[in-house]
Image (cartoon, rainbow, N blue to C red):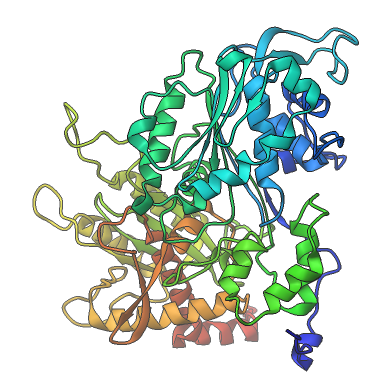
Length: 590
């Protein structure tokens, strides 16, 4: 298939000279000198040198890790020198198609099978083990290693299992007594083994596995028992006798909305990063195209060279032809070749679209003129407060309150339902008015009620309205029996129409990169969670379904704050104020 030449507009595109990929994981962290940071204490040195001596890339070709793979190896085998525990409990390696995830996973499985995968409790002396620096831990093999290659289909496990036939050198096979079969590999006369397992959670229950490689977890969904299988594997690893059994997942970018195990793990990792959940020790390593990357010919080669990392064997011209082939939808190309998590079919905003508007150098400063939007809830949904700066439209999160992930279940003895702490929220609102010059403040009360049957937020909305009304340039409801300085009920049909228009404008602002935000992680999650919903006035936003635990309240606050900024800029009072400011101050001499 021949590809048509780029259009004039496309040919005139300005592409950066250097494409910087979005990198996730400690293996990409650098120090001030620009060098990659390594863990101070890791078995990775020993595993690395062991692999080079005992593994091969085909007959007679010693195995060689790339620099990128070595860094991942070091962090995966990082150890706490005080306790001897591994730093990371689980890992996810997310890369573009063809990077070499299966061969890399096979080498990890081989090391866990017969290699120095457990700390002996002592460190290397000068020159003791070739390639292991002095002071680094010395490993030993697990005496009864039970390694599983897990997937939801035999075809997936086969991708890794066939590698073992040629992976071990003749010397290694002889030394460890390795016998390679199609679905099981034995060593030490059957004491150690590698086996392929597929979707049969009941048969997996209770296994004493020492290491599990989870293959292509973007395919692990509820309908093929992927969820139950992942849960069973996690339980087996948790109850391991020595507490050192772990899991390592390899995956492509997942399809949002499928609720795959890959998606669940990414959500859990990002929740911990945002402080909304406990950090349970997930090593997540991903190299993705930057948010602004386009699927146009001028961009493709530079983006692919950046995203491939050290996988120099990838055929870039061939991949470019695949991306430009009109039979391949853009979302698929972004997932497989840009390693980007494309948006769900009904998503309001793609991750990369929102991320492209992030500005690390912009922050709210005391005295800034801002507008505030508040979305209230009692318990089920989140409560949020967002600000938008008048000068440049910067969106910033001032507060978010939602039920912690570890909140006790209703059947727990002494259970107390979660309620948003209104006094804490009140303190943040009062502080915002003290720090900034607030020109408008709209607050949606939500539908929750307190123990007395009164609207949960009404008493605070009234207090805010009475306290701050004189400072506001714009009032929420200007006339009639419901006149109020800040109360702006989104259930009102007129307000729904206004908000729907704001959703449309905000989406346009993001696509045109005229919206800027400070990268708040919870707001990012809420924006990504938002789904397109149709009402009488067009496209608005909502949760994926009514009972969904994926919150969107900060996305509502963000849209509301952008809406308020526009209303203030167009208000007669603001225009009059601007005119007066433009004329300067008149000084009367007496």
